[in-house]
Length: 197
Image (cartoon, rainbow, N blue to C red; front, side):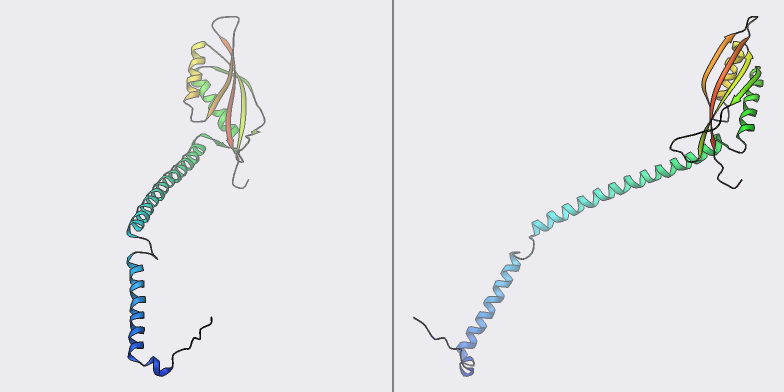
């Protein structure tokens, strides 16, 4: 069965009962909206907000700890880079002056130890894999002297201002006296020149 539905006329809308009903309807809707806000139906509850605040603080603390750790690592890397630069400057020789410097150092150490310097050879520079500016130089030198002089020579090499590595030492006794024939193979590192020639 169909019912006819008519919209109220303008005169009926001005009737006091209709106006009171409309006002009550508006107040009911306003109360429903206020209740929804009060019971946090559309926004998080205070407990949820407290949980979010605790999580945000924990995340902030973790990020700050990570930042401090990263800063410390960056500082260590900078310090290591600076110390590596000082090490290279102090203990490595430039390619232009390396032969005279190293031979001079070996001669001085041999003289200090009292050993007689014999012949020697210097192998061609060998590039170091993974380094663009360092080469390795291998020097083989023969000496004559006593066992005590050899010990002093090795001790002086250890205290040398140049970075000299003893690769091998071959000692052969001489037929007369306490003299030894000594063959020493040394390695050192050479910096490539960064400036012009």
